[in-house]
Length: 384
Image 1 (cartoon, rainbow, N blue to C red):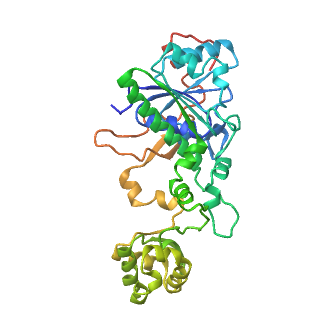
Image 2 (image 1 turned 60 degrees about the vertical axis):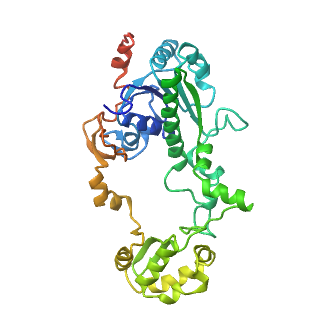
Image 3 (image 1 turned 45 degrees about the horizontal axis):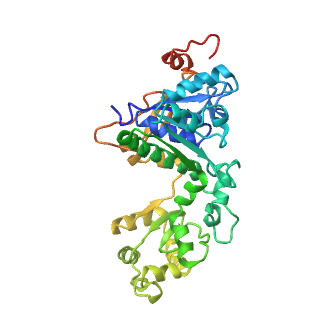
């Protein structure tokens, strides 16, 4: 029995933020039914394509069932309504107001099912001057400040390589849904959860927004460096780069000991964390003059011996092959609808009394339409 095994979720979502939220709930055991148009979630077309099936789509839609409904058709709208009213949770990421016009908005459904938890995910929220604007991860990272602090100091604006605005919104949504379900358990009344990608992006930027509130200044790009800690960044050695984080005085002294540089430990420019941060460009140049004399592997060994957090800068193929990833059993086998075997990164969570895995392979478009609608007493002819 997984933690959410008694919860039914209907997902009216496409691409990333909403499907990621749905998958997090499905990994916890919820029966997540993904409602797709006859054309399917647009993510199904994203490469890499294996045996006609998108591995991008597979990575966000394991442990779900797929139902095809054409919400432009009254009969399918009726079926969608019955399906929604059979659920504990609705997740949707349409433009604000779209599902309400189809009779599938929160207010209409909650009148018939007050305990319903209804989560709307959008770029900017369900109300306000930007509510009707669309958005993708790139544009939300741009408007949300992320690109202003990402990249080298004098470089062009750069987005984070991982779609943090999409997935951050999905994480906030899943957390809010589970919290709302606890309220339902206590009071029997659900709620409408409004999750915006912009809000999630700003919520995760607590250190940057607090810097602005505290100083009146905008944070700036620092490459891999940190505004308040040093040495705390990527450094260049003889044969490449490595990352080292000596975020306090004890670790700084350990760095100097490992490098046999007591003079740096005694240098008044580097006598405290704040001073090292203020003088971090000078400090970086001094350190890299020594780092250039030995390969990355040498420095990883030196700092590991001193207990200083220090790692290679991995590609994804390298980190997925790391023995810690294997030990945690995070990479799981999956079978695509055509029978092709592949792998996916499963839930990173572990619990003493629950094992998270892939108990339902990513679905073919409409694979479960007949079975799910039959559960509601709806028989369909000549439809997927």
